[in-house]
Length: 261
Picture: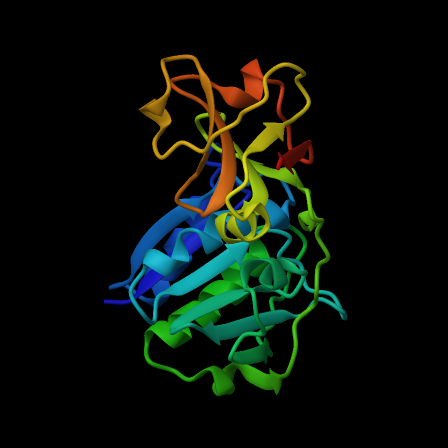
């Protein structure tokens, strides 16, 4: 039974998501549909990539992932289907795939499926991506869907900057509990730290953090903490509290780790 996942910015108030699911069932009645998220901030491919990259790794091989964020096709942003790490991904080549993967995907196909009326943010997802996904779900090959291409559009992002004594990163995601996720990976932190003590600072003076917790409840209720969460990125959190609201942390805020002798 094929698994088809949906990641969109469409929300659940309107009929849009249900029409996409209806189109999947119409083409593939035995499909299993999994909602990754429909609450991606509008048009935000960086947030879509962050959410999906932390979810797809837990799905069985040959799962099919539809990305319905900025799905419109353009000459420099074609619709594509990708096979990578034993899974399939379908969306517009608007830079989201360069944020989703750390390397060039194994196979990239530029889709030749057209939609007669691509005049809103639903129809490319429903009429193009769904057709491609259902073709794959039936055992069809990618090559039938279009032509091979060798690269994807690159989207530049602010990466954590390092020197001998510090790491300067940014908040890239605020989760449902208000935890502020940065772009500082655990591997980078360990490479630069080299066993030294450190100070994690952000926009609120006097709320520095000097240790890494293993769990949220390593500190008393309402206390701030830092830990490497399930995404392997450094998080600023409050035990049973909302760090984004209480510490004023927002997307793109600077978070600095300073190392001491």
